[in-house]
Length: 354
Ligand code: SF4
Image 1 (cartoon, rainbow, N blue to C red):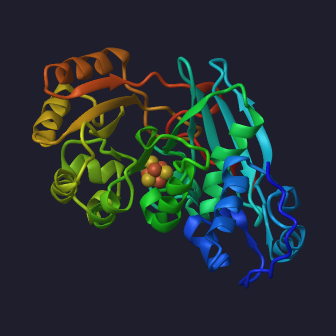
Image 2: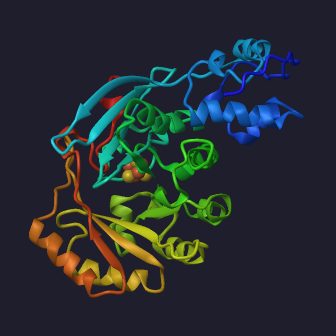
Image 3: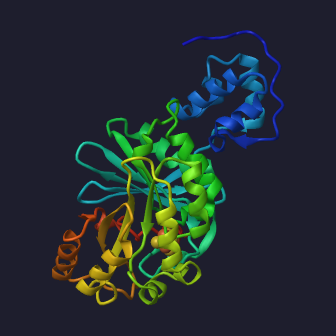
């Protein structure tokens, strides 16, 4: 590692900030005319994961000292960890304002996935989702999102973390700029280096944001669909009243996917609401012409939830109908249910008193 002792003028800095909230462009603005300094800081913060500006040994000492006066590297505090029987681990992070969020580490065959939150709570009110019961508190900063990836990479070096899904607390596309910035950082070759093909942003269907998304990032897209008709979807997902299915499907058809990529359609099966073979047939018709694969997720009840998990026989019947369609169908094996870490079960603030 190169140590440079040459004295340099300190950059003009706009006040004390968390370096985790910066991306490459933000760092370049800190070091006008010295973009190599921005690259060095980026690599220390997001690649090597240092928490101390003083440890950036290829920056001159006086530059480090001055940078420390105006900037810091502040991770959220881990305030809880629960491990399920299947090794899924749920982490609770306390943010600087006291709010608590959760993210989930999911063991796969030969690697791990991280499910990250993008907001504290959520305003979207989906009936099958525990996070919705918290209401919306605030957006996460890009650093608060990125640190949900950086922390486990450092804390668990033996776990090969290769997938990141924006499927935790919050609607990512309502926190658009911070989510796009976070996705750029975590896929950067000098950062955590997660492949773009292995990062997925999941939305409940914020139609206006979809037209921008394909231009702003190459990571994957998942849509939480959950019903083949407006009446059922509006009942379980209020967002459908604003952006009905016809608009959503047409935006998805217009979405410019990278080659050989498909949109993931998520479908939470809820007993007696959306889980009949007739729903499955209508779903096939609705998706006609879309490059998509379908993930079926049996509903995971949470405390005081009024909805019920589907009958396993109905799940299989639904899956059978879809197998006769052009769409690849996956029945998602739910992980972490015993610690409320499965899909739709996160509500950190509600449980941790934030
Ligand atoms: S499913 Fe997603 S969009 Fe819907 S309430 Fe839960 S966190 Fe929000």
